Length: 202
Ligand code: MN
Image 1 (tube, rainbow, N blue to C red):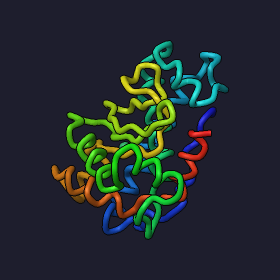
Image 2 (cartoon, rainbow, N blue to C red; image 1 turned 135 degrees about the vertical axis):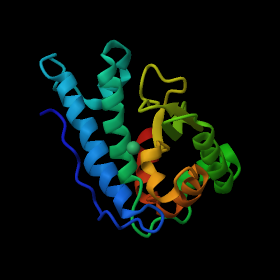
Image 3 (cartoon, rainbow, N blue to C red; image 1 turned 45 degrees about the vertical axis):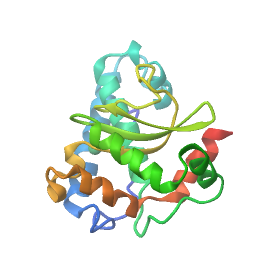
Image 4 (tube, helix red, strand yellow; image 1 turned 90 degrees about the vertical axis):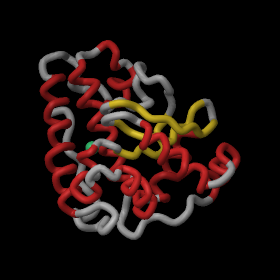
């Protein structure tokens, strides 16, 4: 098997009350696991089993839809688990905080823009903070697409990705995506997000 479900670095209930334990359990052990299995199945026997995930995504228009949907699903969820942590939240710091202030005016404004990107994404998808040409940009994608894909309207390096599929919030928030998007800031892992920004900008 080319790809594995990565280990979750915290317990299912660790992000309570903002993200409930049952949602975490199903989201990680069922949804993410299925993306990994389906990605492996889609690649099996094609000669592409050993390709890096980022390389598959960069050329995803040349692969079957199953690679786009499940490769995106695997990348996006792996990132999502890592940019959250128990007792997270607070404010961005250092060079990332400077870049946020320069590009958006304030962290509050960035939160507003990402929340709005998630709220206005019709159906299922993701809201993103992306580094593009040295600047931070907010965007969203449908389904399991992401800004690494050649098919994406806005391309760049993902710095923050917020899952706005109903499976990410429905058990606790039902139809209230806005409440989920208001709570997500309380569990962000700024150390990991800053690490991604540093890697992307160099
Ligand atoms: Mn999801």
